[in-house]
Length: 253
Image (cartoon, rainbow, N blue to C red):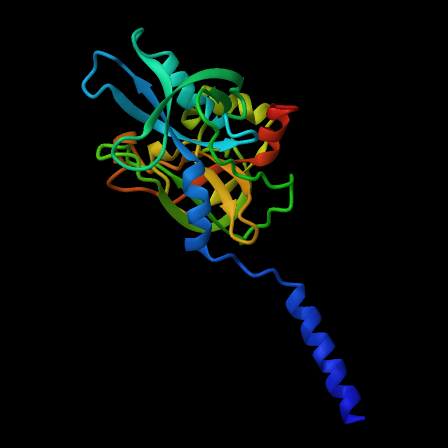
């Protein structure tokens, strides 16, 4: 009888352990992720410096497809006439500068897909749509403060603190921007993360710590007051676009 009870207890314990997926070792995971995270920059052959980082992107698919935010791409495209959109690949003071073609843009979901020239880069794996739960651990890697000393990706970790409509109602109608008013008509859910993001993090991949797959794209951070206060007084609240909208845009790419 005792032997039977011990066997039954061992079976119950094994089922409980296999039902809970352990988180991956973050340092080892970052060794795989960092090389796929790239800088989105403007290039001016007569400028000083010639290249200025504007945001973050990451490589998917065949190793030549880059994902970032549409607002990052538009900011460069709508800038000075002599500015050219480029992608920075590599790590350190002298990253490779790749020429870029804009393939697709989805301004509503703030996603852009680019095509880079040159050798293929290791791609990140995209998670299946759905399955994200409030409270699960995540991390995102990007270039929060730019690349003054070179291209050195930075990782911030936290949790999915809430799944919330992107157009959160304000205390008064005067507080709503035109974009927020438009989104209130057909809002879509985004992930609110309990982690600090800065302007250069726009376009960073958000990956879960169980499978190491990309579940979202960093889109914005909550600003407490004026935009100038972001660096000295960050809110530690970040928003990210679910991967489903990227998958819809990628299609057969």
